[in-house]
Amino acid sequence: MEEGSLYPALQRLLKAKLVKAEWGVSSTNRRVRTYQITASGLRHLEQQISSFERMFEGITLVLNPSKSPAN
Image (cartoon, rainbow, N blue to C red; front, side, top):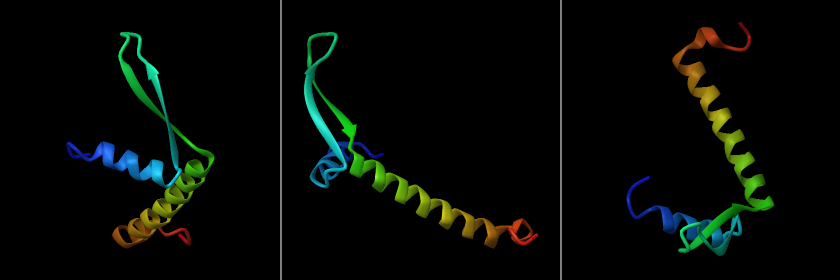
C-alpha cells in the first residue's frame, strides 16, 4: 500500500461495517486503536477470494491452455 492510504482504507472498511475498531492502551502505555474483522467482513472477504480465484483460473487457462481442467 502507498503511504497515506492505510487509514483511509480502514475508514472505508469501518463505514461499510466490514471491520470494527476499539481504542485501548499498548504495553508501552500509548493509546492505540485496534481493528477486528466482522462476520460481514469475513463473508465479503470470502466472496472476494472466490472471485479472485475464478479470475486467476481464467488467466491461467489463457496463458497456459495445456492446464485446462478437461486435460
